[in-house]
Length: 139
Length: 412
Image (cartoon, rainbow over all chains, first blue to last red):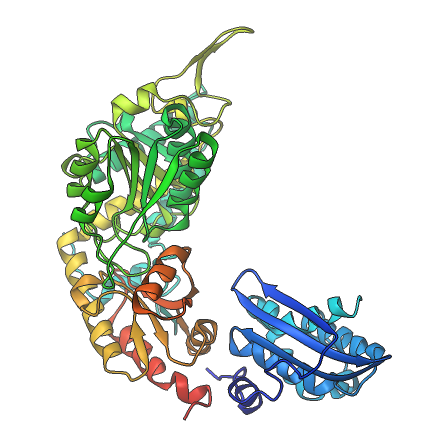
């Protein structure tokens, strides 16, 4: 049996996250909890008008929840809020119903979490960061 | 008596010849062919609503259901089958005691003692009753090795103690608790003792008269029987005085507009149509256990436990929760792998076809208490739990995957 979930990218983001600290300044802060297994993250974003200029997170949880949040921040920093919400739509759809190859390309590194869609127990871990970000941006 | 060896697996269709190591028996066990056949036979040849009809089929269904009750009584050494109430599972049995006995007996100012090692199903019903009645819920703590010392219980009981609820075998650390001594302590202050047998009945011989427990609860599905059938044993003198738990069909003697006379025990506590098919399966499961006998079952499970615990203690960065001695584990070993979250640990096992449980195993107070004692942060764990059909090969496979986990997570 093969191991598809813990590839280098996930392990790297879990062990050596780029964004796992509160940024020096932030104007948005929200805690996301996954009640079934106790994963917790606190997400911070700094925005300038419509643009997300910086971000970070603090948290405690499994590799999937933490790496997924780290990858998400990589992708949304420097993007507009609408672009970030569009990416989260894609991510949620990828996990829940599946998306096209072109759409998956848009998700870049986050696309590797596609295999989670077949693991009901891990879906909540993978979407925790994304769900928290959506709520934060009022979607 | 059948000889217990690896051949026993052939009797379990779900695992026979399959490439999985099923080591989550504390959650639920697989079912032998004889249990599946008993359920099948009930529905193919004897099904009717038990306890009601006049016709032959209903009589057969009633006999099967009541024979199962007698088998359970014999299995745990109850005085009579009237003291056996069928429920859905251990949680329902505990709720029955809490709602019926607890609600009618507990007063403001009383104390209910639960051990810190309890499963949530033996804490939450008591918390509910304590809050409702203005009673106090007290925790009976264990030491770092998970042992619940009767002396400690003796220190915290008082005349105010009304109920003591304790598990016979912990579902996290696998310790067997000295229920007999704790029952003596409970009775010395006029309290009743409620024991949780969910993790014990399939693995050690239980005799409720010998233990002198007032109530004893367990689930069929953790002892090779179907899901949806559980048991509450209660001493006759308590059951007779307790009010019903649920109201409905077949739990009454007669009903008029202004008066209801309840049925005698045990039917008073079995409102509505019962799960006779699962009861037939439970009887078959008891027969199955008897075919091998506890002497062989205990020897085999303890031998597997020892291989697991000794193997695990040799793997760096693996921490066993509770006692470090194999003889204290009775087939249940919870552990942590340093630097790897238990969900990831269980996922890697899953990818290799090894079924283990991750989380708090519905015993968060115990995880927090043990963490506090060791001065570490409370975190969930991963758990291996053994049944009579597990093999040395499965434990070795478990150990091999365990030794590779940190490497797979990219930890050098």
